[in-house]
Image (cartoon, rainbow, N blue to C red; front, side, top):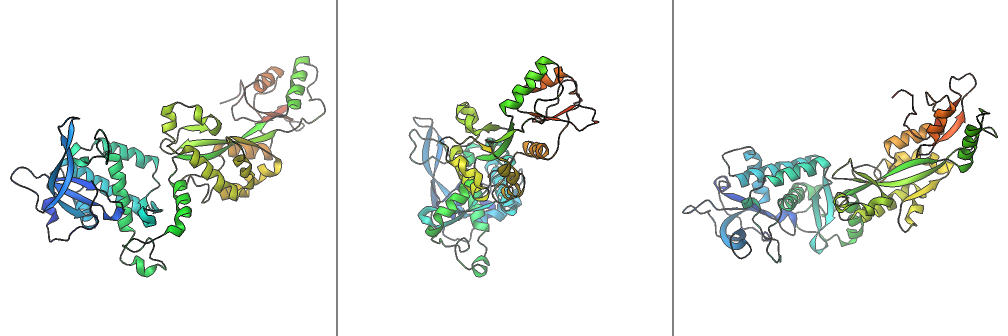
Length: 424
């Protein structure tokens, strides 16, 4: 069931209408969505002549459709009523949950969570987003509180018949609120174009590709981040192990061992669960439950973020040449630029965690910057046994001689985990 294109205006006291059950009817043009007030009880019908098709228990599959009388309330007129009745326990449960959803939708607009998108017929449409993990968590909690009467709409053309989910209807309401509030009476007079300002649909087919690219990035279910790893040369490792086995010399042969190379590893962070981070190379080997946390377009989100990031930091373009983007090696110049000006650029419009583009992971970023600019002494690494156990760990490191007079003979960079015997 979809809201009609135009709702007939009648002088109805909607305050008494909200004493009935309430359900939101979305429209292809979000701002034209309406609320249907129905079911005040036998002998006390809702005033009005509109008819809506709702779903009730019964029938072959346990649910059946039935036409009922209802009053259709335009969204712009329903919002003030719902905001004023929020928390009123005398209202029916369906009204209370929709009042809570409406208040949250207005809050999203107040926080600036608006996305310009292309709707049906290449027309201009505002939608609510991007959503924070806290917004998604709250949405799931609210949906769990929805009674059946609040989402008694059938999924179109579903066989067997299925109900619309509360989450989907609330998201439709938030889009409708965004598309309504953003089009204030003064908007057409203050903007050079009627697009995204006028209440009547405006053709934006010339902006369709750009808007689709931007919106997909802002509403991505997976965020790209970068991890920097130090990769020591084989010569440094072999020389150290040879010295340690002989136990005769404290100095590395040949003086200063070669410094490490650096590798940039792509990793994806779930938008719905920020604690979930997976390397891009290992993403598709994860269980189905884990993949669901990254959304249905995780690969598309990754490629879009890489393309935007490559425009700011060109070395990222090399990752796009790989069949399965995973990692690239960095030379000194690329690393210096990433930890300098490029980091700030990636942390801007392209690297903001909200849009979902790439920037170095905070821990590896700080560690890599320190490893390039100073010699981080590992307290407690004084004996050959400690140095061997440290070097044998499954991670990358490089060893350097400490300055003369230093308490520790060797210093190391490569991992923040302290060796055995050092303070935690």
